[in-house]
Length: 292
Image 1 (cartoon, rainbow, N blue to C red):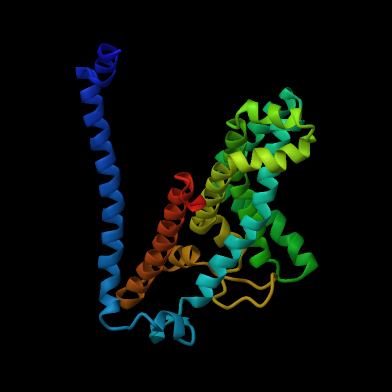
Image 2 (cartoon, one colour; image 1 turned 90 degrees about the vertical axis):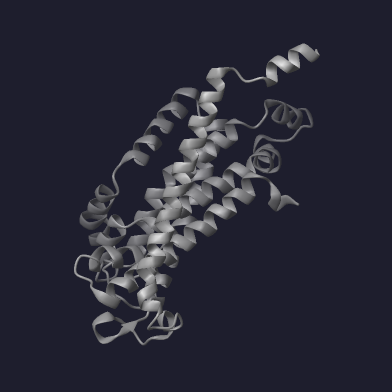
């Protein structure tokens, strides 16, 4: 047994090379992420030296040419569009995974997974074009003008649905069969087993899918730019046009200079901070620390 353990623990020369290659790639990936943060900070510092951080939330409006830099309406628009999309896509994605795993015939489930994977591979600009020519006119018939927060929520929900559904499907598939058989032996119904046993066993993966979908919704640019109207205002309802932080960067970066340009990098820094928070939450969930 001792000899077996020593052989198992002693890496071969090929394993050593592989370990160093993986370490190198991990270092490169970490360095790229760090350089992006440093770049955003360095480009944002010029405006911070002249304008306090509070003005990005207290100014009367967003008008950089007039020295006004209020990001609050766009930050709120980003959050509302993301939250609405997540609220819609999460239950649909999880329930579709439940359908594939426990209710659908194998051929139907396989076909459904392929369709979901196809949705995941469609470019965002195609979603945006579809939303612009189909979804926006439909909303406009209900409540003009059409480009609105509701259109953004709908298009984001469709875009993040494949991520949530595929991760949920993989998580449910990993639930040990013995758990399900034990619940059946106790006389639990299929739906009761899913709610009390399957979801409890797969909740870490389900939350991870939720986090990934949320990250996709926060960072989406083209589709949301095409359907939301791009009006810098605090929305008072679902039918009001909005502008998100990502759309604002895409629209104005081409001609922005001086403090205007630095303010756009502040927007990017805020988005990076939101993603960092999501990654931290995903890490905590994946390690199970949130249960302690």
